[in-house]
Length: 381
Image (cartoon, rainbow, N blue to C red; front, side):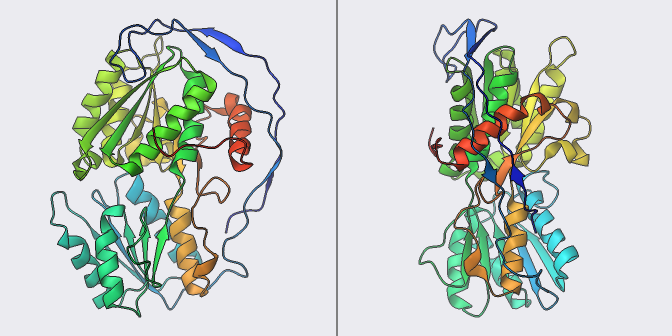
């Protein structure tokens, strides 16, 4: 379970700082001509102390040795260095710490039929795996159907509610906009060009939450900052989560237009974004990438690009999956939060590599302001 700590807030009263930035040639969408020649940075909020969250499953650590847990991954599966890997980490932790008896993993394929999600879930349940955890909103119809047909089995779904709210299906939802706000703050504090970018995998309401928070956080610091936005596929087309080449091309376009920091919320496609940034970066003209979901600086498959990873927005799918399995094992599913947010340690930002150490007081001040309610983060751009 997560440690109980108290974050001692830093009272920050610094005045506005005006930092010279490269002249840009576009609006926040990158479509209009003309833009700010300077980047005015606001002082962070004065923050009150914030108490870190305690365990969402009260009592001693439960014993899950009688559970056989199934996991149905989204496109990309285990090894995507992002969303699916975060879920896999939660499952691995439950095996190590709670003694889960057995697990089975199945993975979605690009271009598969909608019926395939239901087939995978039925395969898990028929094999005796309960709870079955569905990773991704695309599983919502399948969970609704199989949960209704199998009332004695338990299900969880990441990133979606389930029609009819069946009692044996638990949504694991996140405040992605809150974590994205903080990495937007980091981008605005670190940019030298006063020009940053966002690459989304699929243009749907979920990924737009990442975009919304990132932009709001950046503009809270630097109201005149330029922010380019691009999506790799439209709503309904999930290929944008598994196309590194397209991610690389999209990032190159933003870098060529003058952005020096790019945040990618694009699943495995984000690997291409990071590699494009790596190719464009040099000691004299550094460029930075912001990872998503997992601490991508720590991912061994991205070792060749980790030096350009400024931070990552942590969407703690691992925490939600672990807590859900622990709650099932102790029969306390009702104790889970309705949304895994900053207050419940469900989202956050990574500090690996030390590249945001110098701005951590500002980041913590904004974090405290969100938790305390003095800053409300929008879920729509």
